[in-house]
Image (cartoon, rainbow, N blue to C red):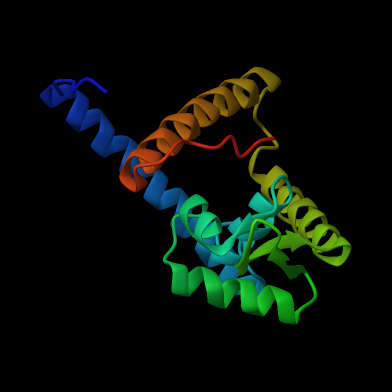
Length: 163
């Protein structure tokens, strides 16, 4: 991939965007802590969201949720204990296991997503439909770029997490 030259304005804009994202994440982290529930961005939540579309080995899960193998393994252990995921021997390699979402895990994920979305909807109550579409478009574009960036960090191809 060709290297690009970053101007001072680009770096300043990137810094401003990062500050806004950090502020947003802090608000969501605080809301999650106050509610006492798993948050929408925890490793466990990321694992469930990924498994909603793909069964995966632990190494793939760790890469896709941008967490270490040990953190991902602990999250999977907890999710398995709660009955949200199950491990099965990988047919292509008997030494490895594949993690998949259980019906209970799927129901938990959907319920959690509904609850978080309902709370977040209050924040957007005065946004126009166009503002919501514009924000969604920008966030989707950013997430595609961030997925590409993360894949380069891991030296692997990017998977589409939306399918």
